[in-house]
Each structure stands twice: as C-alpha cells, then as structure tokens.
Image (tube, rainbow, N blue to C red):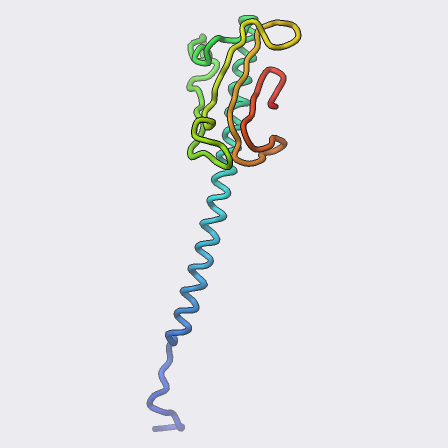
Length: 148
C-alpha cells in the first residue's frame, strides 16, 4: 500500500444516497404531472369559451343574412359558403362540478323570442370546470346579449 491508502476505499454511491435521489425524482415527477393536469383542464375550458364565441359569431352572421337565427345549429354548416365547416364539440373529460350531460353545447332556438322585443333569439348552454377569464365556473348560457 502506497501513500497510506486502504484497500477498502472504493468510490461510488451508497444505497441511502441512491434511495434519496430516487425519492426526489419521484416527488418532482408527481408534481409535474399534477401541474400538467391542471394546465390541461384550463386548456379545455379555454377551448369551450372559444367554441361558444365561434358559434355565436356564426349565428350573428346567419342572422345578418336571414334576419332570423337558425332553428338548428346544423344550418350553419349548410349555407353557401358554410359559416362553420364543422360544428365544435365540447372537449372531454368534464371538469370541475360539471356533469357528463352538461359537457355538451346545446342550442335552443326561440322563434317567439324571450327578449323584450318579442323577436327570435337563442340560448347556447355549456359548462366550465373553473373560472376562465371573466366567466365563472359552472353551467353557463350564451345568447345574443352575451355570456351569462
């Protein structure tokens, strides 16, 4: 033995060091998955808002051309040119307090109107899992007057 080195002096990691590193990696990966799930839920809500605004824009364009709202949303796809090529569908899975039945875009046409003038109007219902922008979470209704 030269220089006072012992024969048992080996370089490497101990079992405890390896277990600590593995535990830290596991904790970091768990936190990143949780953050990713939250981001996905926010993205689904943002898509719901964007879809509703897209449908509302097409409904207003239809109204400008025909002086009445369509009785069915599918009429937006059959105009020449189509106001919407494909009707948007709500993203899945449902979020927050929304149920599976609420995770759809439902269009209701009111021929006699529900507003003060008695003219035709509509209601678009959908559900947000969490507050998005200035719109609170839960079941929502969009109409010609905006999102309520």
